[in-house]
Length: 379
Image (cartoon, rainbow, N blue to C red; front, side, top):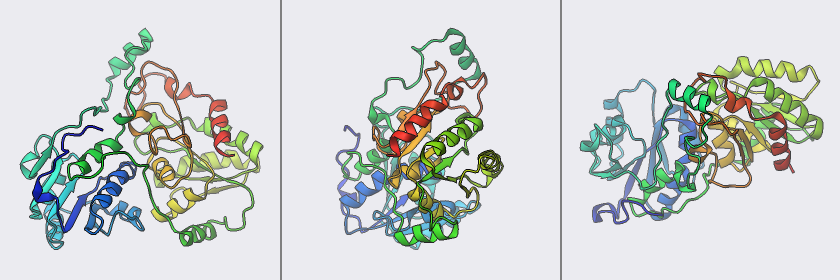
């Protein structure tokens, strides 16, 4: 794979303590794990610390690429973060986000070598501003007018990301940054760790320790907005049919903002006396990981837990509408364990939070297709 930084400066080839400024969202964090693993491979004896938001700190427990996690609160000032980092006496920082703030944090920390992508308003704070990767594809939001025009013309030729190479995926953006430090840029599957003890504790807490039926996961929410959500009634219909065929126990996942939706789906499933454990808004991040690991398959929207499940080795089935599986799909691009479904509509992906027309991208994904995909991965 080509990258713009195959020959890193000699001053950053032999660091003693590396700080990686991690990304801010769960799904994005999972997609950085191949780069972190390649960094560990390149620097096996070097201390690698990861800076991330407090909400993601537990994600990195047990991870082989990370020796230390440093976290910051949502309202913590940039000066506080910089002061905290100074205590670590790092000699090299790799900045994964593209924001000005993330580059300024490591600048204020006085870390002598600071590597990240070249972007407006931040290059001054970096000692090595890495050019954009050859083959990088931006996620461009369509305007409402553009969506309506594409729907009216039914033009397939203007569909975004219709013929992208696997290397367009977001994991290659992070791998390219690791390659700026001399790491191998070839892809690895995203990887997370959860212990058997954590799995057993989660099973006990949520009443799954003596279950003999297969366990499937259902994750019907999506934090970004309704355009990413396959309709709730379709989730219910799919869950009914899958349970009919397998006799499975469903674990219903979601965050606190998904509790109303989860309760609605739970009530419609329970009417048919299905086995279900509704854990939406009730798990810690580590418990979420443990329960996702328990599932034979996860049926989910394009969300952070989708990426977590795939990185734990749980197959995922995902209806995609407003977003692009080519750019941010789960796992390693092309992994046959996962099934990513799309409908053939001209306006998808639009990358909008809400659909300005008739939600044809998600409505066009039939329950039968989803059930078949789940059953194929449940064997």
